[in-house]
Amino acid sequence: MQAEGFPRRETTMSDKRKIHDDSGQGLNRRQTLECMAWAGAGLVWTLNGGVPSAKLIGAAEAATASFSFAQISDSHIGFNKPANPNPNVTLSEAIARIGGLPNKPAFMIHTGDITHLSKPKEFDDADQLIGAAKLDVHYVPGEHDVIDENNGEAYLARYGRLSQGKGWYSFDHGGAHFIGLVNVHDLKAGGMGNLGAEQLTWLAADVEGKSASTPIVVFAHLPLWTIAPEWGWGTQDSAQALKLLARFGSVTVLNGHIHQIAQKIEGNMTFHTARSTAFPQPAPGAAPAPGPQLVPAEQLRSYLGLSSVRIARGKGPLAIVDSTLAG
Image (cartoon, rainbow, N blue to C red; front, side, top):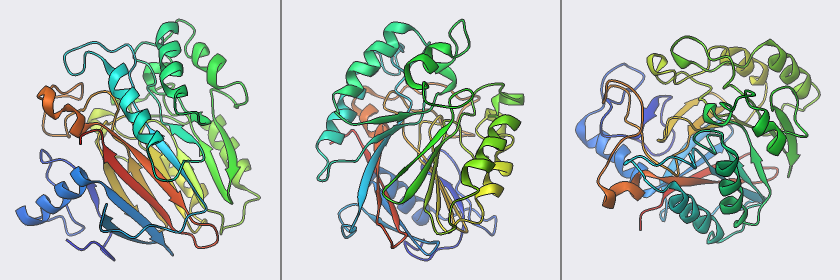
């Protein structure tokens, strides 16, 4: 497997799922182990002119960055089952890791499932733990954040006061345009995500006046590419959103929900899902259904983690560094 200039493919970083290249042939054992090693050690992904390269953390040279930001996902505060009886502790560890980054991030993105049951105390606890980072935080909801009796009003009251519709919004930072989308309302067959006509109309207007050279970073809870439709790991109308972004030279799509790293490079678009800070889920095909995966307690932190993203102004590259809570 090439680390630089490799062809487009889809991968999920797990020893439980067969990994395919573009020819449809399964990768051999050596290549699969290399992918697994990348996942465990953490990766730096860099885009230059739409061509991706990847290097292990430690082997990669530091990027000259205008700014960086951190991504966390799927904190599930309030969860108390054996897969992780105390996700508050592991979220706190993730926040401490962010605090220890060599260069302080400009802000943090949380890609949803802040809580497990949308309860006020769960939101309160999450706010207290995440607040320790002392960073501005940009949120999008997960499906677990909108199951209060008023279908997400508790989430909007806390995090969506300046948003549109059910919580979507955009902002600019350091020459890049960030778009927070909501795809956890009105879920479709199998639990597939849904953006809806109103949000898609808003998105078209939001990017209409942007130069094609503007780096675009999109973040939402459910993946905006189809990973496993039988498990609801995708968004039914994502193709309409991606079509609106196709003219931009650099588009990065950050998601959560599946609690494991999955990546795809397609033309000028990089898709990346983050680890959870709470518990892992099985890879598709490794279990009858998705859900919290019980692993030995001493291994749990190797399945949990965070992402750090760097953007260099005027050069177009964007690097994603994944790290676990282990070690």
